[in-house]
Image (cartoon, rainbow, N blue to C red):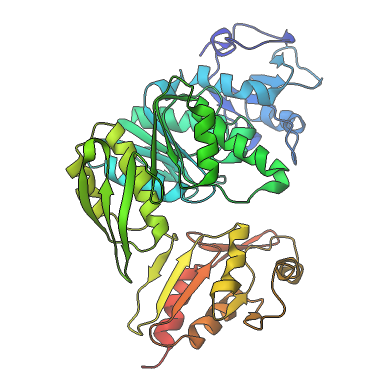
Length: 452
């Protein structure tokens, strides 16, 4: 792409060096730079990209978007802007030729349920057309799966992934949209066909500072949609968001169990191995739905997926058929099969909601997750602040494998053991070392070692 085409709609403070430059690639990480690339120098919270210009030059970078004064080479191009963070989404849109307009992009935001809703939709839609995926458990571009460091990656990575999906024949993409991504404008210059709100509980306040800021960040997704917004109105924050977006020109749909929603689940019955409910929808239709998954939260996640499929003009009976054969998402309240009649589940939990473990459990075991450079005992001390010391139904076991072993060893037939925290993650990060650790495999090993 010619440099002038890449810089369309960019407010430039100063452009120095050759202007008639062909840009072969767009990067924000100097480690990935290749011959002919342009490097966007991001001044981030932990790393200043301007410090890696020399290493990018050595790899063949021909142009740099900067916001600081740097030492320049006459034969290379430098584009100074007010903020590289502000222009990165426009650069991504221009370089990949606005891919979000060429694919039906469905964004899911909320504290919990994003991965499940996005995965359910991908599985349902993929039965007819290719569907890409961007989220916590990785990126699927219609051909290959990739690991993903953040729930919602950097804008360039998103635009690149969407472009790959289009080239690989994807008609749809389901995408988790985090509050960080919305607040940091990682998803600017993108158009979503449908936006979905799952729920909101206290989380990420170290970043957002106030709960209102957190909610507003989530709400901003629904100003980026073109066809429909879908809101869980059983959640009070969903009702607040709905009131704020009702006046937009985009149609809205609702789902829930307790309120009169567009799609509502009634007569919900929860069993050990399935969940059953009656689906009520537009034009007074009713369908009996049986899920191969457990938990009321699963009903909400499925309602969101049902609503999106309805908006995409899928036949209601076909939607119900496809919902009924869905399987749970890896690491999301996933059952560890065993012949001991102990119900062991692995879940991905990382919010203050986890404090209810002590309240509703016979015994809560507090252990380590990904301590990184923190001392596990110090992390546990912080957790213990929220523990009711008057109740003696908790123990601390720092080693995670020992903690899982203790929990399973205490369990009797018919008991439930919930291993919360890591979910789909199959590693622990201790200092700068990544150690293999899969809660499901560890639990399975311990269960198999038990007598009986």
